[in-house]
Structures are given as C-alpha cells and as structure tokens.
Length: 214
Image (cartoon, rainbow, N blue to C red; front, top):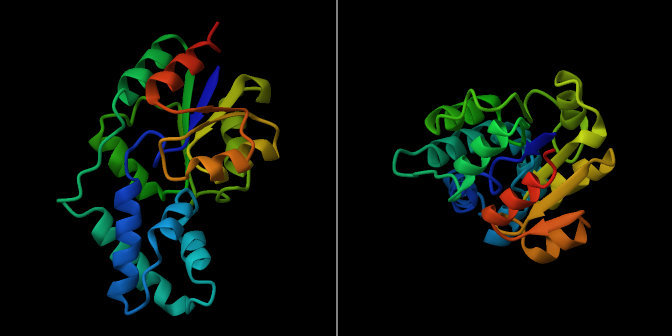
C-alpha cells in the first residue's frame, strides 16, 4: 500500500508559522496583510498560487520580495517547527509493516528537504514531490508522477491531507483519500471537498491507515 502525505498541517504542526510568515511578509513590503482565515486557506498551494489568491492584482515585480521576506520569517531560528505528536511513530510503524510512503506538498524543494533533514526523515520516504518541480495542487500531476515512479496502481494508493486542495487533487484521478481535521482548513471547508474519510487526530489516522495494510 502507498500512503501519500501532505506535509504542512498534516504531518507538521506549522499552520500558525505559515500564516504568521505570510502576514509579516506582506507588511514588510508595505502591503495590507491577509487576515488569518485567508492566510490559512491558501496553505497547501504553491507560494506563487497563494500570493495571487490573497492579492489577485499583485504586481509581479514585488512577488520575489514577498517570497524572500516569507522565507526569512518562516525559517527564523526562533520559529521552531514540530511534527504533530505521534507522527514519527506512525510513519515508522507503517514503513515497518511494508507500506510505501511519499510526500506531495505545496512547499518548494529546498524548504521540504530542510525540514525533512531537521526531523531525520529524509531517508524514510520512498519519494517526495514539491510544487516547484511539478504542477501545484489541486492539479493531480504530482500524484500521477508518484504512482509512476513507485510503480503502484491507483487502487493501492491513498492521499492524506488537511486541506480541500489535497482532497480535490486526489478526487481528480479518483484516488482514495482521507482528510485530517486538525490542520489548516476548518471542518466546513474539509467537508465541502467531500473526502472519503475524515479523522480528527494522528492516532485515529494511524489506526485508519493500518487497516489497509495486508
């Protein structure tokens, strides 16, 4: 069985850090900061997508400056990032039971590799896909690439995420999916994307995924 995880808000407890960094970055360049709900909603998109969703009329010339300030705030030494409690144990247990593990994220490659290294998880995943290497969510291309790379049929894969972007991506190719309700999107947004299943905690997710391993 192949389990494909979103990163931020699904495995890593980073929703506050992302929303705060986005708001600070907009203020740094003299723009009105998005409110917290809007900043949370774009989590899971590529950073370019997120910026244009927040401010559709954004001057393209200012985007690199916003991204630069976002990265400064997000990766600030005082901005400690942690996995949700139980995530590392869940991942290793699934791996030890023979499951394939992958990441499909809106993060860029440098950012994902940095947090994977910091969490000692770089070698755990069989493959990872980032939004700067392929089409961003909700386009399902990264899921299709993961299936091809790991030679896994669609029926043997599950997408796990905390946002409607993750669920829409999976549903676009009729991939089984599960939404977690402890991340960036609230329960209403998650339910509106009509996921196959919703779980409210890491232990519940662990138990649910284990049921698919034969």
